[in-house]
Amino acid sequence: MERDFAMPDYELQQWRNLFLQIKSQSPTATNLLSAICMLDRQPIPILLFRKEDDVDQDAEAAIDVLTISIFLKENKDENVYVMDPSMQLAIKELIHGFGATDKAKENAL
Image (cartoon, rainbow, N blue to C red):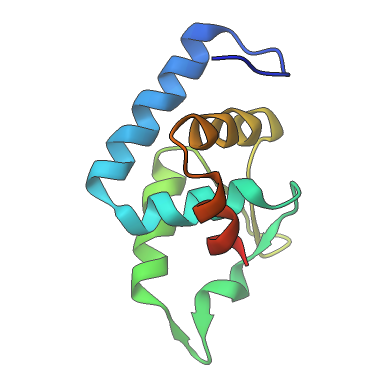
């Protein structure tokens, strides 16, 4: 896999394996992660996962999967979720390798 950032192959393989595991367990989490990776390394406001006064249960479950698997970190002080930039690039490269870049961009919109 050709890439333009420095990450050891074994580390990329670990992220790939974890991504595939999440993909098999939670398509919603995979779609959310793919969409987040297409964004420009910006924190994601927690409020985006709320419907008026209620929490979107599917989104909440997906966020739980992604925070437990360490793809996302919650910054409670700023009420946002963040993703490590090198991890974001690695996952973006994996999505590209799966041929799903266009779908991920569409989901991000």
